[in-house]
Length: 43
Length: 361
Image (cartoon, rainbow over all chains, first blue to last red; front, top):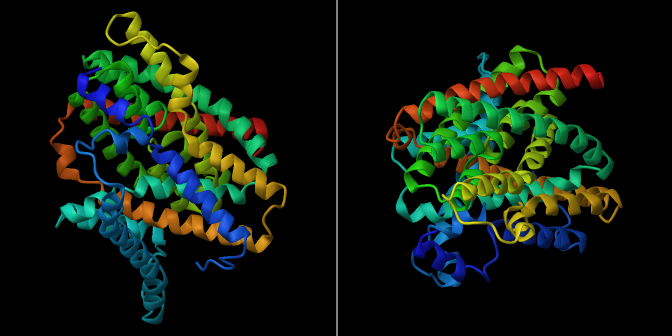
C-alpha cells in the first residue's frame, strides 16, 4: 500500500462509509413514515 | 463500495461545503429521472391518441437513455459531477427501503436458493475469467480484478480488491471500464433475451441478479422486465454482494502468499470492513415489515420512496456511462471481459433453467 493510501485510510477511520450513510438515511425515512410525519408518498 | 467514493478525494472538504457541492448533480438526477417518468406517461398516451404503433417504454429506460444522451453528447459539466456520483447512495438507500416489500420468509426461501446459485456462479465465473486472462496473456492482477468484477459485484468489487491486492491504477481503470461497458450492454440485451425466451418474472429476476455485474445495472435490468423481476434481481444481486468480503479476502491471501500484497491481519475485521452494510439494512427493514411494525399504507409509502431512489439511480447509470472514455482503455481487457460475460450470461441462464426444473417454476 502506498504512503498516500495509508494516509487516506488513517484519515477515513472516523468517517462513515457510503453504505452506512445510505442505511441511516433509509432508516430515518422509515422512522418518519412510521411516526406519521409523511403519511403518503406519491408515485 | 464506500472506498469508491472516499479514496479519490484528494483535498479534505468541509462537510457543509461537500453537501452544497452535490446539490446541482442531485437536482440533475432528479430532473432526468422525473423527465423519464413524464415521458413514460405522456409518450404512450400521445402515440395512442394519434393511432401510432409505439412500444410502451418504461421510465427506467427513458431515464437511462436521457442520461446516456447527455453524457455522450454535451457531457456532464463539472458542477454536476459530485452530485451525479451520489447515484450509488440512492441505489443503496433504495435497496434498504425495498426490504419493506419482502417478507422475511420469502427472503430466507429465495435467499437460500440464490445463495447456492450465487456460490456456483462465483466459482464458475472466477475459474473461467482466470483461464481467459491467462489465454489472452493479461497481467495476473488485471485478470484477478476482471474475475472479481464479473463474479461478484462489478466496480465495487474491483475497487475493494484493488486495495487488498495492491493492483495498479491502470489495471483497475481497465477492469472498471470493461465492466461498465459490458454492464451497459447487458442492460439492453438481458430484457430482450428474457422476452425472446419467454422467461417468467422469477427466472428472469434470478438471471439478471446472477448475470449482470453492477448492482445499479442489475437493478435496472430487472426493473426493465417487470416489477416482480426487479425485486428478485435486487435480492439475488444483494446475495452476491454479501459474498464480496470472502472473495476479496481469498484474493488478498493469495497475493500475500506470493509476496505481492500485504498480509491480512485480522480476517474478521477485514470481512466486516468489506461487507456491504446495505444488505443488513435491507434485512432489518424486511424483519420490521414482517412483524407488522409498519401498516399497509406505510409499506406502500416505503416502496414508493424506494422507487424514487431508484429513479435517481437509473438517471445516474446513464450519466456516468461515457463510451468515448471506455474506448480509450484498450481492446484486450474489454475482449476478455466481453467473452467472459457472454459465457457467464449463458452459464447463469443454464443455472436458472436447472433451478427451475428442480424447484418446478
